[in-house]
Image 1 (spheres, rainbow, N blue to C red):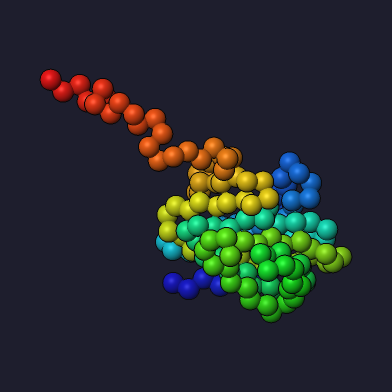
Image 2: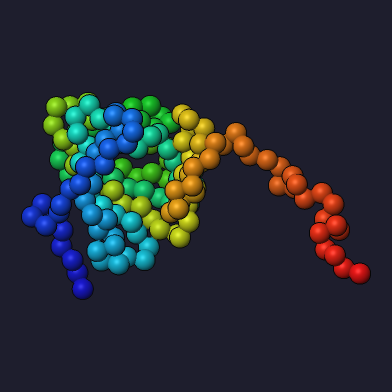
Length: 162
């Protein structure tokens, strides 16, 4: 059954990180309300002089922003662009889809955030060289990467076959 969302039935909760510059308000995860299998979506409100999530890209999810009201600066690998009401921005998988918003105005910027849900995703943060395994939010330094066969030496010793 169709479900209509609008300002009359959206409730926003503040989300504050330990770093004050990363702060926003988000609606209840609307995709959970409708029990969506393939999309995550919610509405976010980015306050003035605040940043969205750290600069990042997804390995296994595409993302789409629809600016509902206000303005924000968008950072991508191509530089910076000002987004305004009515703009729709698509972020592809991989480093070329890296993005971050900053509200450079004195008014909130509301936007619809839609992401594909393929069960599991890896999110990478180029500024801090981290990876995040989603949906479990397991964050690791990317510098800890090892060779695929590291620690697999002496495989015969692990088989205990007589």
